[in-house]
Each structure stands twice: as structure tokens, then as C-alpha cells.
Length: 139
Image 1 (cartoon, helix red, strand yellow):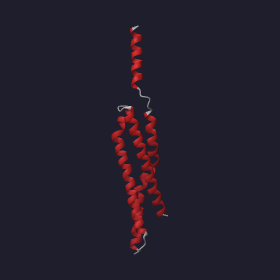
Image 2 (cartoon, helix red, strand yellow; image 1 turned 180 degrees about the vertical axis):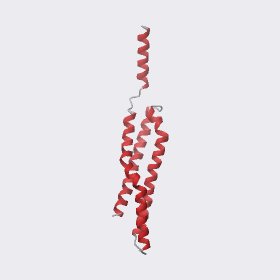
Image 3 (cartoon, rainbow, N blue to C red; image 1 turned 60 degrees about the vertical axis):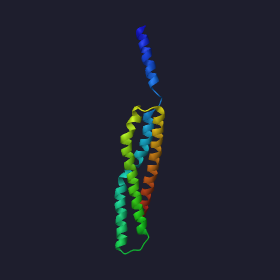
Image 4 (tube, rainbow, N blue to C red; image 1 turned 120 degrees about the vertical axis):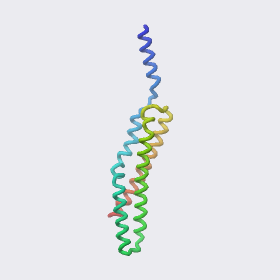
């Protein structure tokens, strides 16, 4: 009888500890966006160099073309997109373990993953926009 009571107590304890959150699914959803734009992120610095080289060529040719300013603006956008992802990755590395492991409560965990999903979605949009502008300018 004591064994049965101990097993039943352990089972009830384990059930009470689980909050029903699929932390792995929440993590995978966030990371899917990150993984989608990671290859473009790796190219942002290269595109920036190409954009600035093109601006320098126009400038060396004594061009008064408004294209020079446009190219420099694109370079700034590429830098900003690169920094947004760099910052996000540092923040994720620093903060995610608490929420992935279950150390944080259900509501805190849901709020964290919702916030991170919003951040990676904005990051994706910024990277894709800057990349598309650079690619169009380099044609």
C-alpha cells in the first residue's frame, strides 16, 4: 500500500509540475525565422562593401548623380539590418535558456516567446528589405 501511495504521489507531483507548454515548438517557430534569414545576414557586409564601392566609382567619375546618396543610404540600412540580427542573437543567447528550460512560469514563457517572435519577424523584414534594395542597386 505504501508503494502504491508513493507512486501515486510521484505521478501527481510530476503532473502538477508540467504546465502544458510545448517550449520546443515555441523555440522552433522563432528559430525558423532566424534560420530563414541567416544566409542573407551573412551577405549583408559584403553587399555593403559592394554598394560603397559603387558609390565611390560614381563619385570618382565626378558624378552629381543622386544615386550616390541613395547608395550610401542603402549601406546604412544594410549596417542596421546586420546589427539588429547581431543584437538579437546576443540577447537570445543570454536570455532564452531560462524560458526553454522551464525555469520561468507559463505566462512569463509565453510572453518571452511572443516578444521574440515579434522581434525576429521585424528583423526578417528589415534584412529582406535592405537586401532587396542592395541587390536592385547592384544590377
